[in-house]
Amino acid sequence: MHIGVPKETKNHEYRVGLTPAGVSELVQAGHQVLVETSAGAAIGMSDADYTSAGARIAANVGQVFAEADLLIKVKEPQPDECRLLRPGQTLFTYLHLAPDPMQTRLLLDSGAIAIAYETVTAPDRTLPLLAPMSEVAGRLSVQAGAHCLEQAQGGAGVLLGGVPGVAPAKVLVIGGGVVGDNAAAMALGMGADVTLLDCSLPRLRQLDAEYGGRVKCIYSTRDAIEEYALQSELIIGAVLKPGATAPKLIGKDLVTRMKPGSVLVDVAIDQGGCFETSRPSTHQDPTYVVDGVVHYCVANMPGAVPRTSTLALNNATMPYIRALTDRGVRPALMDDQGLRNGLNVYQGRVTCEAVAQDLHYDYFPAVDALAA
Image (cartoon, rainbow, N blue to C red; front, side):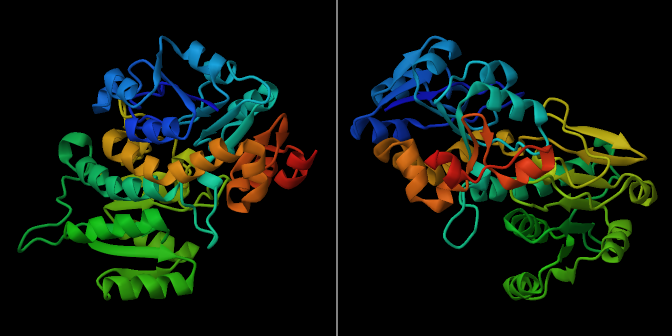
């Protein structure tokens, strides 16, 4: 199979879809890999590294899209990239379609096959390709939030862990999944006073046992969110509805009553954000202020640590890439329900129910679309 790896073009996005080690594995399996020049250069993966692994180097993105049967990316294709896709070509990357009607329309018009990392499932219904970036984003959310709390960044001038004689900052984590768990661990490690909200009692019991009672694990209700949001200096939004638009858990009216200089970090911004005042920001211009509250809503947060993120992502994606390349795209999707759950668009049809519902498209079950 001909595999293409374009250079990412989103603002300050330096991750790359395949490492040289991944290329080597695919080449040894008999596949051809074409990598756009400088695709991994910013994180120490040179064109020479890729050629040593057996890849060919493309002079531009157009060549990659023209020759590849399977495109491996990290972030969603930008509009110019969507227009380079052709019918029957397969794209494997993060898509986050529910809050992005333009990308969805362009993918449908292309006739391509689009498989989203974020909706691929494991047998236990976890999200194996979202998990590594959720781990990174959860840990980064506390690091970024602590920085935003500094006075020079518009924050309240509070040290997250305090010092002897001065209380630590109060951190509220909304959502007890992979992001929330990692955020709580980081905040606790930095000495903060941490509260975590979730609407699953079994998950709360699990987290309470994990942290030995050092994190306050509270059942999430509107009243609980309001109570703890008004007390907190840093709030991390870590909720997820796979494939769907994130629910809005903190409204504008609550933001107006929060502590001046407090910080909101919205890790759900890729799925539309879980705060009503959230809007996507970039690593170049990461924050903005609403009613005295600093908002950090960077849509590709793990891109801040692209080398770690690239290695972690490739560890997770390689078994699925091998399945698609070794067996063929359609057989691999037919044989593996978890991989098939990642199929969001198939030759002009929306095959992810959550995306179809949120964007008002007809829904075609993936298995039916593949059979047709």
